[in-house]
Image 1 (tube, rainbow, N blue to C red):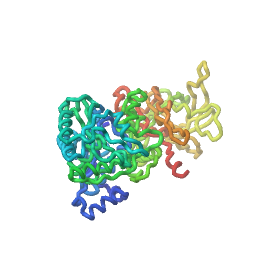
Image 2: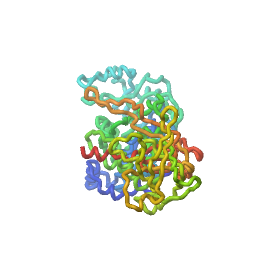
Image 3: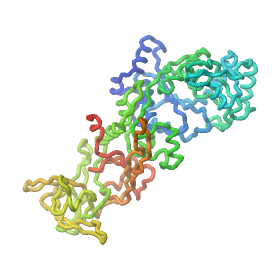
Image 4: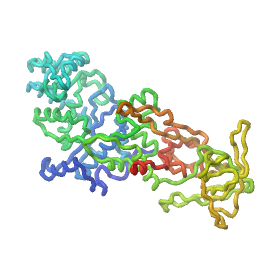
Length: 568
């Protein structure tokens, strides 16, 4: 599938849908514009750390930040928080840009990196030291944790807290010059070790990391923490509204404190609830563990909640954007059913996808009274939702494949598909009746013998008789063999002692290698999406398909569980 940006300028122009949105963040910004707080400017930013691939939770933040900027004729910056070289890679930088463009957003000329500001951030650190608002501390990480205290007990001052600022400046310069080992010293803010907010108990601002950086190489061996780089980078870039998730709410006093001590432009930080979805995890660290432990094939494994995986599986950016709008923006944490996202994907694909026929678990059918060498072409509609997509020709012959579960030798009540002596309709074809069953030596059914009504072409009998079952099929002579991968949730949710835990789903992937598809799929290219009639929506895999070996990923089933959830 192409990763080029879409023609829709969603990152620059508000859609009609976005104009009607209303939430507490937009209300705050509307009031700021009325009062002229930032001179009527609205500049937001999306600040990912390039230590993994983006997931569906990031899509909500992307949609919010780019959407708000577009609605207010403002700017949304893409800034990489590349302050931890030990975990960051150029691969992730490129993948994040590809994902944002796939969603339909564009940052234009406003691409930044925290590393762009390293020199300025270091100058800010020097200012704090000179103002006796920061000091170099020799405690190791474990000792810093011990001195920090707890939620019920105040912390203790570091024995190095009262060093003269001249000594701190000297030590900071020597840290920058690489004289000390990793972990030997850090730069800490001097705030209040008795604060009720643990983030204000002399937090670390700089630490020594002797790892080559993907952009600055070995120019630096000390790096700012996120808390120090975040607010100051916002300020440098002129960001007006720094929108982040609620886990940073307790960090806002520190964000404000540093900006106030430096006396520089002060953006407003606003927090919203992060996106949580049933049956999955929304942590890059945990997703990285799945990749590293080999539980999935990679970040783009179609079972993963990453955007690259969803793209490979066949999700559309329009459906993902609609999902982000539907879940809304709030302060309160909640869990959204995965069924809602699947419902929206299904709605979008229903309009856009060409219908085709494929048989996933084939069983051969021989129509005994159909001429052996005859082949005729039947008309099939490509998409009843969109007449402009036209129709196609389906070859029909004496030997067909149907789904294994479309036949039962001893059917239960209310089973309306094929059975001995029973008549069904072949989609776009004829009425057929089963007259015989052929089994192998161990009793497995290997072939069905049927007859057809030549007068029922197109699925209508001239005598007006009705049949209750309609099944799909492909001509055996013309069928194309394809591989199909069926996906379920990667995790099963279970409740234990009042807590939701996630356990792996051993049935999250089923691979079928002997599926049969109609010949029109011979020209399908990676990334193309189809509805396999009666089976679901499928996408040609972008990694493992070739012109001679097509692999299809099931995007979503036809069954919509969201409507059931809504009416519980």
